[in-house]
Image 1 (cartoon, rainbow, N blue to C red):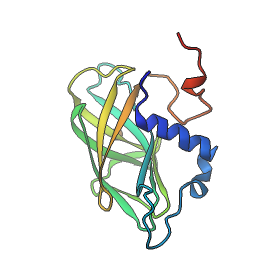
Image 2 (cartoon, helix red, strand yellow):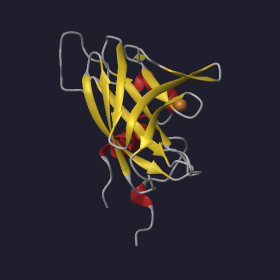
Image 3 (cartoon, rainbow, N blue to C red):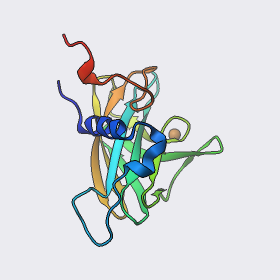
Length: 174
Ligand SMILES: [Cu+2]
């Protein structure tokens, strides 16, 4: 069974953290002046919600951790699944295009989840079905481009990392 690496990474991080609220303590704090190989940006819990027909757009969600001591900005996102991808954040219940990007504070995180924001993939090239995955390139001002793979999650299915979902390895295998 193939598991996209963001899912594996997400599972590991969630296991280490135990709760989403403990993000600060869980992110390795870079020692000033040293680079011990920890990635500056860690993306977890990436997924794309299966679009409800006849919608021609799909929403991608993920969490970005900035492990550095410097603010970074998610400037743009591109996807192999549609013609355009737009970063949308939700402020006071209103969805707005984050034209200048979204800031991830030093040692902080940016959570794109239902009610908080998403990347809207527009003019889909084809159907997106559960079991498929979508390649996304996230471009950061400081960290540069980072490629991730986001599985397509069925309508109504729980989002990765949203609750105590069973680990894939503990499920009965056929
Ligand atoms: Cu939107």
